[in-house]
Image (cartoon, rainbow, N blue to C red):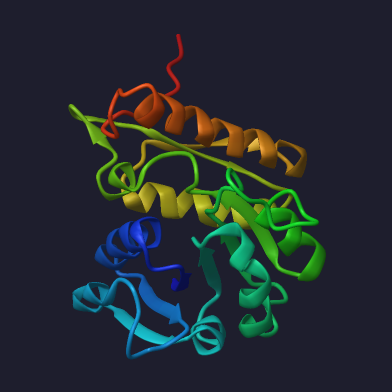
Length: 203
């Protein structure tokens, strides 16, 4: 796949690294191609840097891993994203992109893209290495687009997650963000450390 990564910090960088190892073409979309966070990502295979607009034009999948309030500026720069797949990996925990509750809802209102919420529910360390003692942890997703969910699931498996569990449609997007807050609470606020993760078990 040709994947645009908008937001080249910890989460975007971790996903870009694992996806490049799987042979995906990674197009980093940044404000300034000469100065940006995550320049070391260019050492990865299949990875190039472009303006946000050009990265989006070159890609059929777009990952947004930025602070939620940046979405309006990003929307202005992305151009036409009709029928493209957008993965919202952000969390509106401290600030929401008002008047929208989440980035997902802003994207749903302002674009005609296929949108899914995913890669927001755990720390970047778990996205770099989702293996715990030989067992792969789970990723979670939510949204209306089955097409986008199919792609998100495949990309989660490409990262090494054991599965990508469907949380539900757009009415469950906020719940999935609260699920992310649960991880943050346990890992950071309650002091369990960032090397912890969620997995669904069945019998």
